[in-house]
Amino acid sequence: MLVKDFLKEIDILAPFSLALDWDNSGLQVGDPESEVKKVALALDPTDRNIQAAVDQKAELLITHHPLIFKPMKNISAGNPLTGPLIKAIKGSLAVISAHTNWDCLGVPLALAETLELTPSGPLEQVPEKLLKLTVFVPADKAEILKQALHLAGAGRLGDYTDCSFEIEGFGQFRPGPDSSPYAGDPGLLAKTGEIRLEMVLPEYLAPCLAGVIKSVHPYEEPAFDFIEIKRPGPGLGLLGEWPSPKEALSFCAQKLDLHPLRWAGPDPGAITKVALLPGSGGGYLTMAQKMGARMLITGEMNYHQALLAADTGFCVLSAGHYETEKPGLLKLGRHLEKITGRLGAAVEYMYLNDQSPWQTRA
Image: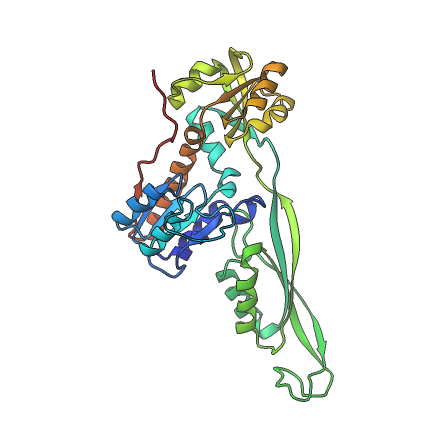
C-alpha cells in the first residue's frame, strides 16, 4: 500500500472534512506515492517516537496529535518544535495525523467502550464541511469522467461510495475562431446533449478533482464549479449510560488506572448518565449539565473550570489527556489492521510505547 492509500482509508473512517478549523489533520510530511510496509502508531509525534519509528524502519507514522500544529517561522534541527519534522524527513518517514476528525468519531467511542458505557448521542454537533461538484459533460463521455472522479475520492457519503446524481440536458456554446471543439464548428452556435453530474467531496480534494476534470473531460473548456455545503456531522464528545448505577469515580479509576484520582466538584456517588469529552474538555462542563449528565469525564481542565465545577455542584473528572485519548489511537490502529488485512496487503503494525509526560510520586 501507498501513503495515499492510508490517507484514503482514514478519510473513509473519519473524514478529514470533520476536522475543526483550527486543526491540522492529514498528511504532515512525506510522499503520498511512497510505499508502506510497516506502520508505527503513537498518540504524539514526539522526537522520541519519530526516532523509534525510523529505527524500526517504519515508512509511516500515524498519530493522533499533529506534527505541524502552529505556523513555523523557521525549521531548525536545534528547535525542539521543528527538530522532529527534520528527523522524519531525513528518515523518509511519512506522518499522518488524525486529530479532531477522529475526535468526532473514534476517540469518545473508544473511551466509552473502555468504561463500559452505552453511547446515547454527541455532546456538541459539528458541521461537516463539504463541497458539491457540478460538471457538464457530453453524454458519451459521462461514464468515463464519473469513474475517474469517484476513483479520485469524490462521491462518498458516510459508508457509501461512488455516489452521484446525473440528469440529461442540452449545452449551448459558440466555439471561438481559434478553438478545436469536441462538438460543433468554430464560429457557429452549437447545441449538444450533455449530462449534468453532481457529487460531494471533502474540501481538500477540490484541486485534485479539478485536475482530473481537465485531464479527462473532452472539452477544451469544461464547465464545472464547486459549491460549499455544510451538513450535520457526528459531533464532539458523547453522552453515555451505564445499565445500572455505578460508583462513578472509583469505577473510572479502576478502568483507566488513575493514580492519583483528580476531580472537581462533589463526588457524584452511584450514577448512570455521564458525559465524555477526551482531551481538553473542561470547557464543556455547562453543556454536560444541560444535557442531563451527572458527571463530565475529560482529560484535563484548568483552574477556573475546576472552580466552576465546585461552585455549580457538578463533578468533573480530570482523567488525563493521554489516558482518555490513548484508547482512541488503539481503536484506529485496529480498524486499519482489519482494512489492510481485508485488502490482502502485507503491512506490519507496531504500537510505540509512548506514555503520559506527567509523573507522580507516592
